[in-house]
Length: 336
Ligand SMILES: C[S@@+](CC[C@H](N)C(=O)[O-])C[C@H]1O[C@@H](n2cnc3c(N)ncnc32)[C@H](O)[C@@H]1O
Image (cartoon, rainbow, N blue to C red; front, side):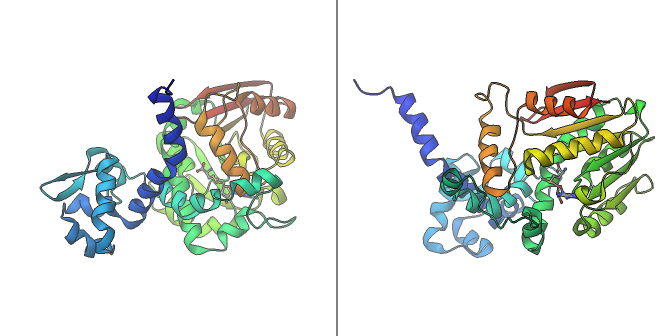
């Protein structure tokens, strides 16, 4: 009996998924969608403008047509509507910065998955006193892509947090591992009584200070430079930890949660967001795959809603709850 076609097609898509992925990531890297947003063009014109070789230019562009990212009419290429909206660097709706990060860092690093599966070790330069951030932040190009990639990933979550959490019950918040401070800025923008702090390593200070200064809420948002493990957390009513815990092993995850708990007042809250695994560990392929990636890159791992809530309860949070955010993220809230 021949295999049913959908089953074979599913296996084929998984096996060759990297071809589509890398074609798309290279198009973002080369700025194809930004170039075409302004000027639809023939492949010959694009050869020069994108600095791609004439032998392969039409093949590359036609592959993007087949992926539904470009359209071609009478030899003229233009962006498909969604690509135009989300992948043109000159639009506020641009989401390409995290794909620039994926292309520069995640794609090559994930090629080492088998080594991590054999050894259980990350494939980056780790040691007792050097973590992944020392490595990332030592390379200016990676640093910039990382910071922009994080901001691209977190701006939607920041909006949701700013609009849906009960900020009226609190006066101060601190985003721990805030990167350039997108969450504190958006929370302060939408809640005009909140004083917000972005806490991150000193390497972030120049870029965060500039970002905050250019926001409309610089009088209520400040940057706090420090190392969470060495300096502890300054007292605040609410702490946020976004995409932070997954970078660390269990002992460090627990230490961070405990530090937050101890620095909160009674009724204070900890909000943990990120890509979390479904409790049955079988549904959320995005989270289960990201959990493999993070182990190739760091000593950390992703976790289920249930695990996260249990760590908060062990640290002393009396009430915890979890919910899914639009777009596959999740949030766990603990109240002291
Ligand atoms: C994966 S990023 C998440 C950024 C941001 N929360 C978001 O969701 O977009 C983790 C952040 O934690 C910061 N971080 C890592 N280790 C830290 C430490 N020991 N002290 C302070 N910040 C740290 C990094 O610099 C980085 O900005």
